Image (tube, rainbow, N blue to C red; front, side, top):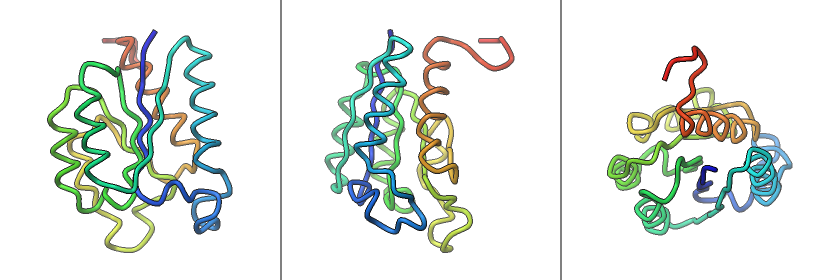
Length: 152
C-alpha cells in the first residue's frame, strides 16, 4: 500500500464555478472523491489539501517528507513565480508531479513558464481533470518501482 498527497493551490477551490470554459464544471470535491476512489481501488490511500496561501502549501510539502510516496500537485498561479514552493519541493525526497487542467503553454505568455518543473518528476498539462488521474497512475508506478519499459 502506498500513500499519496493531492495538493491544490490558489483558486482551485473555485473549480466548477470559475472560468468554466477553461477549467470545466468539475468541482475540487469531485476530483478529490474520484482520486480517493482510484487510489483505494489499488489498495492505496490519498490525502487531499487545498490552500490559497503559499506558506500553508510549503508547510504541507515539508510535512510530506517520508510520509507520502508521491504528491500530485496543481500549484495554480504559484507555478509561474513561487521560488519558495520550488525550493520546498527541492528540499524533500517525495516525487512530485505538477498538474494543470488547462494547457498553460497555449494561454497567456506569463503562464508559459513553470519555475517548479525542474524539481518535479513530471508535468501534465492540458488534459483537463484527467491529468490528475494520470499523475496518480505515474506516482503509483514510481512508488512500486515499475516503468513502462519493464526496467526499474
